[in-house]
Amino acid sequence: MNGIGNRMKALFRSPSRSMWLLCVAALALALAWAVLGRVDRTSTAWGEVVPSGRVRRVEHLEGGIVSEILVREGDQVQQGDVLLVLEETHPGADLEEIVTRMDLLALEQARLQAEANAAEGWEDGPGPEFPDEARDRHPDFTALCHELYLNRMIQRENELSAQELAVQGARHDVERFEARIGPLEQALALVNEQVAISSNLLAEDLTTELKHLELLRERSNLSGSMEETLAELAEANAALAEEEERFQRIDRAFQEQTTQQLAEVRQELAELEQRHARYSDSMARTLVRSPVAGVVQAMAVTARGEVVEPGETVALIVPLGEALVIEANVPVSDIGYVAVGQEATIKLAGQDAGRFSGLPGRVLSVSPSAVVDSGGGIGYLARIEANATAFMRDNERYDLYPGLPVVVTIHTGHWPVLTRLLAPLSNAWSQALGER
Image 1 (cartoon, rainbow, N blue to C red):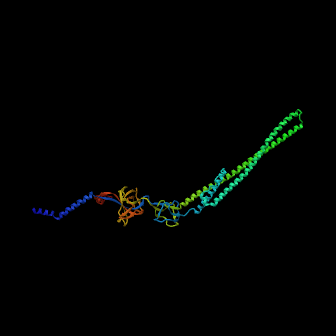
Image 2 (cartoon, rainbow, N blue to C red; image 1 turned 90 degrees about the horizontal axis):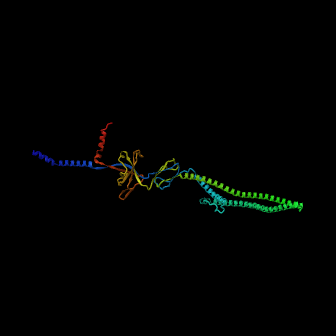
């Protein structure tokens, strides 16, 4: 018995016993680490750096034929810069003709307005007030309009002056006849009184019938003169009224003619202004401009003569000065773990990934439904905000730039090591217990 005990003690004191205890301890530690330890749960997605305001599409409402291309892909443009020019629907000569006609009408309108003011009694007005731009572009026609205004004013003044003389002559005739009526009335009254006295004397035979007849003849002559003078006065008053009406008619005719011409000029000018607005708008639409300051990412047209369809996108502009974000295509299998506010790590894609450290970021949004990318893959679009604008390595800097491909690792949470290790076995076991 003592021999057997001694052999057992020797066995436990042997090196194999120490190895066995070490294995048991290691297994216990591994089990404890698997149960208590945690590993990061992540979702890796390919992404691309884009402006927060997204790439701007430059479209043309009406379309047309490309006449000139002024930028190339990669060029930096400012807001309002012309990207390309389309052929004009209306020739530029038509617009120039309209502008010229509008200038001439504006000068004519200023002349007619001055004439209308003069016709309304503004004799001491300043004369035509010609528009500065039209006057500078057409000095000869301006001088012609001013000379025509002066001639018209002289003609009007001459006609009115001549008619004023006629009115004064007619008024003088009226005054002359009116002056003759007073003495005739007095003489007639006196003769009537003499005839009355003579009649009484003749009845008493104190005068001769011959003298009485002479008084009657004198009264008859005075009455005839009075009637003739009154008739002439009536004719003179009628002539005066006619001359005064002719004076008003001359002034009124000048005013009506000026007013009518002014209305016609204004109407034509208004029509030309509408045509000018349409032509100008049409010509402005032939210039396709950049809506924002940025970089030309792509051009849909590359040669003159190409046709731009109505509503077609002709260029893509990447805005400058806007914050950059990363758009990542999250796999469908991981979307249940991804949420807004989760932390993320952004790394360069390609051979430079190991040279630069990753950028920390944060999930800003996740698309509500799956989208199909350009390669036909299905995923959810997540927007990640980076905490820096460049990858760094010592003093070396790699700036984020729109269109730069990156790899995004989204930290979706933690889970025990044991759960992670047993996940494949658990999935296989759950499927093995099912039956179709």
